[in-house]
Amino acid sequence: MRDRMNTPIRMADARSTLREACSPLDADARFNEYSILPGFTDVHVHLREPGFLYKETIATGTKAAAAGGFVHVLTMPNLDPVPDNAEHLRAQTEIILRDACIGVHPLGSLTCGEKGERVSDIEALAPYVAGFSDDGVGVMDDGLMREAMERVKAAGSIAVAHCEDTRFSRESREAEYWQLIRDLYLAEMTGCPYHMCHVSTRESVALIREAKEAGLDVTCETAPHYLTLTDEEIEDDGRFKMNPPIKAKKDRDALIEAVCDGTIDMIATDHAPHSAEEKSGGFAGSAYGIVGLETAFPVLYTKLVKPGFLPMQRLVELLTSAPNKRFGIEEDLPEEADPAPTFSVWDLDESYEIRPEQFLSKGKSTPFAGWEVSGRCVMTVYKGKVVYRR
Image (cartoon, rainbow, N blue to C red; front, top):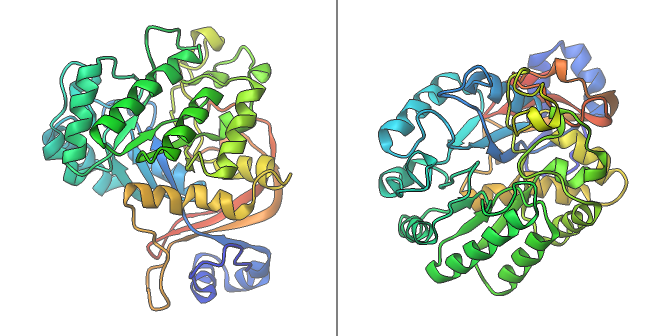
């Protein structure tokens, strides 16, 4: 097995786990064909439970994550109930403890019910969540956002912002970067650690770059679809509809540059499953959101690493150490004596067609359907337990 990333994961750990999961002769025969990578972290996932089990559950969502090599996910708070106080959060964490096969780290909501009217119980939630977000909607009230950021800062947490100024059309680029301008001003004023979700425009990239140069405690993410698609490729199909929407070629190129130079800190999927009916109304009539956990690494490896746009080392950093460091997630890279290793095993040479009907997620809507990609996840191991095997 090829340890492409030179991690402290022992080859003996990988070989032993592989032998236990399949026949010893098959494991030994194929061992040298595989590559071992750290388990990935996705900081932007919708598992839909509690509240919307027909779209996804914690059980199905974490199985899909494991199939994509992910061992940690941060879950967005647009649930029912919204985790805006300790009691509502408990409704989610009890299911996580029962059903999750990987590490699941909830985000609390910035405002009660994500309604943008009153700040959530930040102080009570902070010890138990990875950060605070009203994902899916932008907080429009400037004073309320300032109060939320002040309280998040005081609680030692991080504000995770969906930037969408509703004075503009959701499809416009201004909807994203105008609210980002406001948020960066408030981050500087309050000193609150700030993370921007799903960057999609070149203006946002420039603003984030400037904020970092000024010393603000700011990070951001983008998603595989913004790095590999342009608005010229959008079809009249619900599988191309997400929020924010895919932008122009100049935006995609600016995002790739920002991923390479460190302006964009991490890649997240914004895995947002919906039912087949909700995605069957064509582009205009379908719900916003696509799935991405099972396609993220193969798409990025095929479209960015293999053509030479992005080094493999940088892609793995974007999916592991960078998100883990920002959100305080344990690295799970075992020392020599660790009896519970965490890693993923990949056949990087295998090419195949992305077929949504084979997804473990309940959601099947993806713009990558039919794409020919390289890189098949063979196995994912979380704390010594095989949570996915092919």
